[in-house]
Image: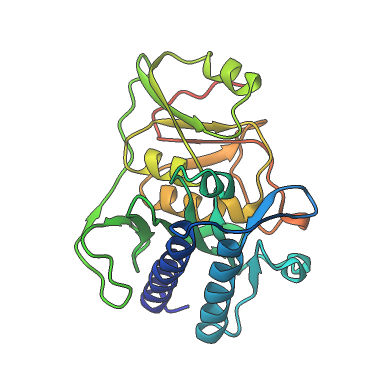
Length: 265
């Protein structure tokens, strides 16, 4: 894989998909349907998926592609593949809360090593560069020309005063009970894969997820966090969260900055 090409293509497709999503987001109304698992899907999910999938297949025809919105891609099991969630945080999108993201990642040997997370309503763009380091780009966010970037890195956490981020739409008592094991200075909520990015930038130290997620929900965020020096582990045994699992369902997990003293379940 040519990582310079991969970075350029993922960045461009994420921005183009984000623009398409915002056209629909800013419209007077849009259709919301239910998938077989009763989760919502909109025309924005489908339009972004079509754009990204076509772009990735053209640029990388020999690399397996898994995408949330194409069920026929879910039967592919491989250790090296591209994985896409064209609109993570559909509930946030439907409720016009802004915390939704475009996610594209490249997984090698079960580990997401490159990724892009774009929050179009918030104009925040995070991605791994050709060397695997995570940057946040600012400025006009032109799809064809990269603007100014800054390398981001996780915090040096104070275990007596941790910053915690948790899900906005999927918060439950089990999550609150686990967070209660820590000395928390402050807590914030965010939707979609933005939670990984907040740990990556040092805006949060810890993100526990005690709820259902799929690999396409987390791969890009995990790549961004890894590139900023962070870790993602299973909730049950603190071993690394790996990808290419049959069915693509994740176990519960914890994303965190090194230095956080993790508690057991």
